[in-house]
Length: 155
Image: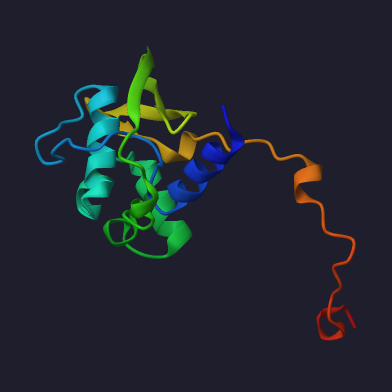
């Protein structure tokens, strides 16, 4: 799995989006009766700019995380960055284990696992369960020629 795709997922998750899915489903008609339906409906709603529907397809914890992280209403924040979601993603394998599931989504040569939770009989995307990729210290190195202005140094 490519680190870039996982980073995009984690970044967009903070604003209520997941950079995976497949477009074309009518978010008003598609339900969340299966994990695959939930992911498809979630992405379709995001691509259609329907923040209210996006939030309906998120777990309660995910909505709370978006609102506390962003200090706003989920529906107002949930469609930010949606133009970055390619429409050619495909829903792949699904693994269910009780009230948890993972749907594998592929596209543009990348693959990502989307976690879901069954809440009150409906499958919902659980952005709080997205695993952020490990980033090595090499990836975070500071260029040697970087200098810090004197006014930003500690007195």
